[in-house]
Image 1 (cartoon, rainbow over the protein chains, first blue to last red):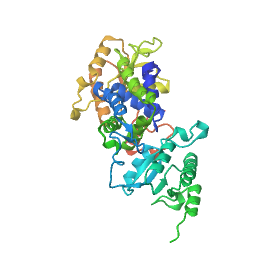
Image 2: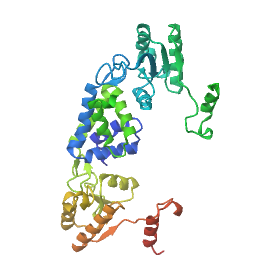
Image 3: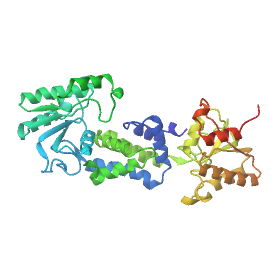
Image 4: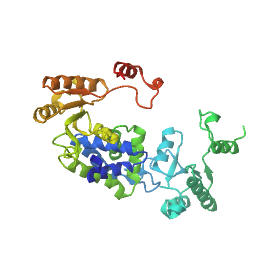
Length: 199
Length: 199
């Protein structure tokens, strides 16, 4: 069958490695790319090559960007004293979609995970600490994920930043807006109760 | 934001054009490809280019393949007098996964769709007719999709093939195995009743 052939199998593997793409989706995408007109198939290959050569990490915050510094870091209407720390570029996109945050960001490009050999030097922790030393930072908001690695990273950064006299906060975790209590899992509910605010 | 930048936007569009990939999945894939190590990102680009240059349509049946003729057409343990006609290469893969079909195939690479300008000359109808003229074909099974276009294509091929004296059949449509009657839609149920077989 077609995916036993080496070149097609290689394409299938490369697509299967993408996040959220199972074997069936990868097969469907590969068949489409192999059947499509030349222009459409080569467009993906060329667009990827072109994007990789043009898109860089912002020298200030680490966000993926074409101009360096990025549009957020070079926007002087934003509060550059307020830094929101996220694990991945997708975190910046998610918060920006909300449209209410007016500070700037710091992208770690990962989370601490000693079992997989990811320590502070493998992510952009050093750059964040230098940034808080140099700039007039009034508060750092830790918005790492609510996973074991994200929580560990937040704890580590909290200690490092507080030792430097920086005000540190963590985003709230609780029942999502519009969500009924019956749909929230136990850990989220426990967090929601612990993190209750006095009215 | 990153997807306002031209190169990243182009990559996002190219991914969004893939079948079954919505905007959010395309964003996730694009961010992954932009953040991944060089080797991983370029691997997809290179694998696609390589596969496009090596994979061809089988000269006999039209299936995507690296050796030409394909493994199925060159397998002399299969019944070359029995030809199953499908719209796309994915149809061949689906039937082969079942493992019980022992004939060969013919891939149309589309279905008749006059509104979108797809007539018999835009798909491989001519090749199928030539094939039935030349070879010792005992039966053609029409396995085009159960859509308006697939049905129209099956009707058209039935007439053309019967005029040439070829035995033609259509795959059965009905309630899927393991599926309860309450989950089947009205059209499927009507088909299942019309196509009942005497026991």
